[in-house]
Amino acid sequence: MNNQELLCTYFKKWVATYKFGAIRDVTMKKYQLSLQWLQQLAPGLKLCDVTRLSYQILLNDYAKYHERTTTMDFHHHVKAAILDAVDEGFIDRDPTRRAIIKGKAPRPKKSKFLNQFELQSLLGHLNLKKEINWDWLILLIAKTGLRFSEALGLTPADFDFARQTISINKTWNYKENGGFQPTKNQSSVRKVSLDWMTAIQFAGLIKDKPTDKPIFVNEGQKIYNSTPNCILARHCKTLGITVISIHGLRHTHASLLLFAGVSIASVSRRLGHSSMTTTQNTYLHVIQELENQDTDLVMRCLANLQ
Image (cartoon, rainbow, N blue to C red; front, side):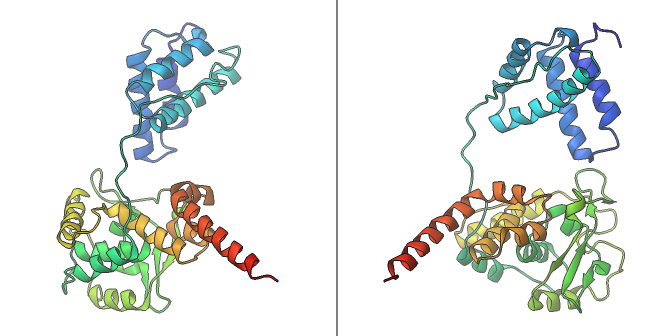
């Protein structure tokens, strides 16, 4: 390799060599976006000239336009390539060591989930017709915690009504040209149990559907998540409850399970998370609230000891 090669050129080659075909398209697009920012912020920075100072300046420039979590993602992308360059001897030492991650103040977060009363109101307001519609998808995600793409990828063959389970083994590529594609990760391949009422409802709903065709997608139909999001928002506004997205139903499902006393391990498996750490980080607010309740319970138990 030419020792005078630009950092952005090396990163482009590195992504093409190590990432292309090995990661999902949606993840690949994030790496390509990092490349675009690298080309914009450091177009003339040579790989051999990357020092702790120049790398920190690069991160600081990126952080001017992005929140801290997004800056962290950019850092992880570029750092991975640079560490390989260090291993290959193209750079003498790791210039990303002890990098400081900055970023714009995060925007105020909207509530991501409904409480139990709000969810009950929502489910009671759904227009569940005899034919499949978006309200049926809203019901299913609320009851199972599936990702939107996982729910779209369901076929009648994925339902086992005798065991009251759904097999999650694929997703629907709604962001591009449709069609089945693999799950987000290997942990996402799982069986999700259904309550008996939902099982009975869907047994009648899909009994005459082709076993290998998605139940929520019609032949040649282009799907946009904005469509069910708007329908869900309309329900919420009519009821005067918190307005959430379809993905917010997944958060609602998980939060209610945690508040009901279901273990983090079980919730993590049900959601198809790659690790319990992901579940803990995502639902830290719920876990902290439960810990406060546990502390009160411990104190009451100890107070009763004579």
